[in-house]
Length: 148
Length: 148
Image 1 (cartoon, rainbow over the protein chains, first blue to last red):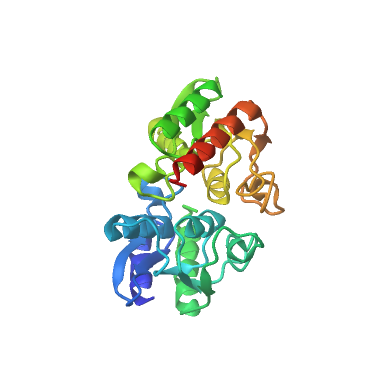
Image 2 (image 1 turned 90 degrees about the vertical axis):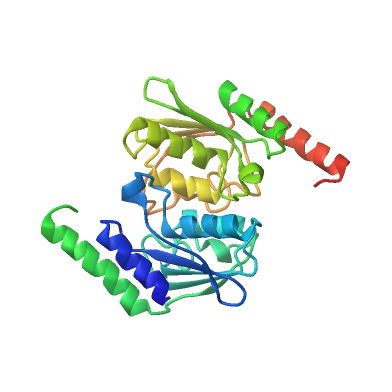
């Protein structure tokens, strides 16, 4: 989670919503890491989780992440939560809960739906305060500068 | 939809699940089109809809598709349905309904959820038979060749 938080801070420094993600293999080694690139790439689908999972399968030579853990600073949105199933992700560890945009423990609760394509193990609230503080600070600064 | 079906057929010829997508601007002009590239790119997130929407914002110079229509041969999955909201897609027209994997008129019904990030207008069942037949034929052939 420390590396995911570092990616989130780096994203904030680029003017991106500060979310960072890391994919670990079954031994806990880092395969890939990414921060949001929505603004830089002008691509609304360039969320940290999508980029980290895509990079992990690219580097891993397979296209499934069944033995892997995705660590992300914020509860994934429905796009990323659904992508986790397409990638057959083994485990998700996330930081801050997102009652508005999250789709893991909130909203559509995709990994928990009956008939879900694939069940990813979920652990939420890891380093929650730190991850949430990053987002809060980012949006407060945005509001103060009038850019948000 | 004819162009989306052509993209789906081209995807089948490449050994991909035959789904094709097209993004049209407000005047009905084609901005982008794509077929599935999951197998070729070994990327489980390379669905036709994602590729067509990403390409449309790249070519359009903005990053929102509020005036645009996404035409796709199959009811989008939750990943693509959620991405539609991130792209602020104006309208979705799809072919075959997907009672198992779809998340527009089935499952999580993402565009219709209370508190959805963005509401995309939805028209389903356009050229439904032709789109469904393509998929049916593809999976029947897969089973017969023992590859599926």
